[in-house]
Length: 392
Ligand code: FDA
Image 1 (cartoon, helix red, strand yellow):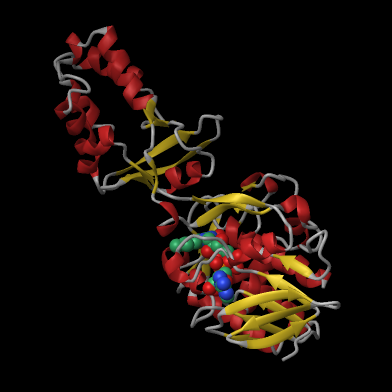
Image 2 (cartoon, helix red, strand yellow; image 1 turned 60 degrees about the vertical axis):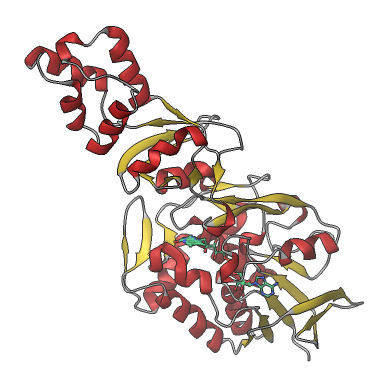
């Protein structure tokens, strides 16, 4: 079987690239191991797909080659994708922080990609087990389900390792290594942290959520919600900081980012000296959290009048400077993305073609490009897919 271009992976990047190539007149075949296209898209954004963000720049991405994303993001912007969504009359809304979600559901995005692929006469082959990829004198041979396919250009769009239940495999990394390319060690990211033994008492707070500002050791910080779970800490603030966390490091959490607890307590001491510390804290923090701190002896209750400077300092420390050392992360099972991947120093930022292997391209999450939470990972899929299609 022959196809001008073969794309491996029918996810966000693979489908978008295929549609554009097909509409440009190329014969394109997409091979995927799953029984459905765009499975991660359907799961994304809690089922409503946060498909891009109103503000997108290279500062929203991590890569060992930080400039790599600039060209693709400039050539296919968030506004380009937003206008595609609008062309299909798909209703969407901004949830917070510029994050755009579908009103009706993520299926709307999969439907757009499918219709775009139909326009481009793309041949999509599902349930394909790929057993070999070989470079030929001109092009490549791909063996899938025992059948041999040849193509002039081969695009790897197999994504990262998160959510193995949705078909994630290390295939893209293996292909890169087969062709002598470097792969930056992958690790789970945008992922909840787990408790160390000594923090497991916090499991009692499971379900409690509050706005925080969380800091990595290198000083990057995010203000958003933190959620206590029975296994550890989650919520958007924690997922964001996980991109910047290294094993054994601690993170700092400000549990009251918009106020100063010392000022509040000093003020209340003057107006109501007999007020209990617990009552004062219950007014500004989740009750369950305050109760657990007291239960655990993290501080003792007393009237505000009796609150010594030392005790005030310790309350201030736990609220504004909580040092939390994760045991680890929940790993690929719940991670939204994979950090690391195919080394972008060995890929053209203009076309996504491997610098040393003519005709071999890598797009989307398989590359060492990780976006923040907030629609940035899909935007990378769209932008990298677009420049690849233009480059072929
Ligand atoms: P993607 O993973 O989408 O597609 C890869 C495809 O390759 C899959 O279809 C897979 O089956 C196939 N494949 C893998 N190995 C293969 C093999 N050996 N042979 C054949 N096929 C193979 N991002 C965002 O911007 N906004 C959001 O709201 C969310 N939400 C979200 C929720 C959850 C639960 C997850 C897990 C992830 C997100 N993300 C997200 C991240 C986003 O889903 C991700 O970055 C993109 O889907 C990456 O697109 P790709 O096309 O690169 O890979």
